[in-house]
Image 1 (tube, one colour):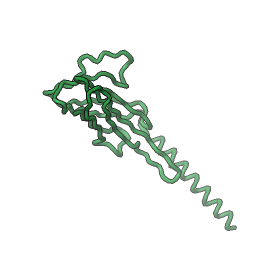
Image 2 (tube, one colour):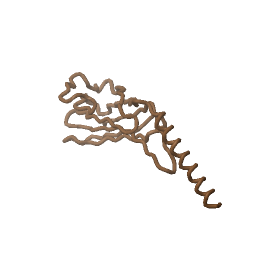
Image 3 (cartoon, one colour):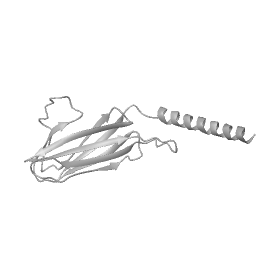
Image 4 (cartoon, helix red, strand yellow):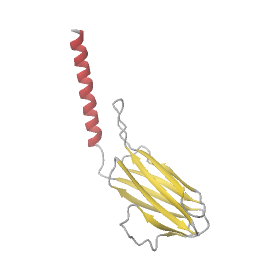
Length: 153
């Protein structure tokens, strides 16, 4: 009798976990909004030279960050709310920063994490060293949108 109760209890627990996982997946939106802030703290004019969301051979003329207007913002929709990223490069006078924002959902049998974990990175890849930093500023628990601040010094 004890084995029957244990088996029944385990079956109920397994069904409950499957229902919870299915509910979490059904709650996901079709896209997630990435709100980006670019802070130009170099004292020089900067230009966007590459973006992962743009078409190949895109013309980036006019996508700049003037030294006298040190902040700019843009929002882009990412198509996969479970696991996606966006990268771009900003350049000026030999300094080049490559920035990335990403999110990824992690599921485990013990717990279900419905909101994707967000991260942001920045690295200097130019001939002249630059300080490139990135941080998630809003939306760490959101499945709809999150904000990232990218800073180039």
